[in-house]
Picture 1: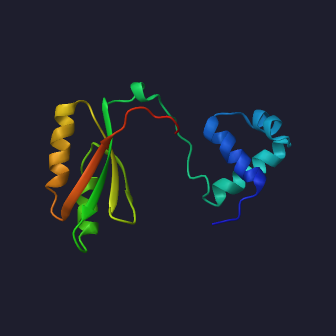
Picture 2: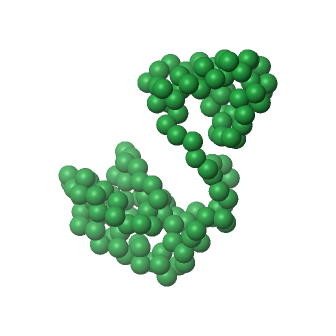
Length: 143
């Protein structure tokens, strides 16, 4: 990965706030020229620091009413098999490997508590899953 300058970090922070901000506005905010912003943006994209631009929606606008995070403990060396199976669950929006007592962290969303309960049972029944702990996400205070 490339070394990020202070300007790169400030530019990324500004884009996290508003990914649609015009180059001229970013230049004013950062106190540099439009050409400088453009060259830094091009380099960050070329060097795969910025891997895409997306839209963020308010939680209440997104589909699904129950959001949660499950910590999953996996038996022995079955992590790859468990990941393959969990990838097939459409309710799982993201999954991360981790260290410590838990092997995987899965973020998921379901439309209601009944579906949420079924999902937890499906996760627990995946061969290789030996333990899980799930917490509901209530309010997002930082994204």
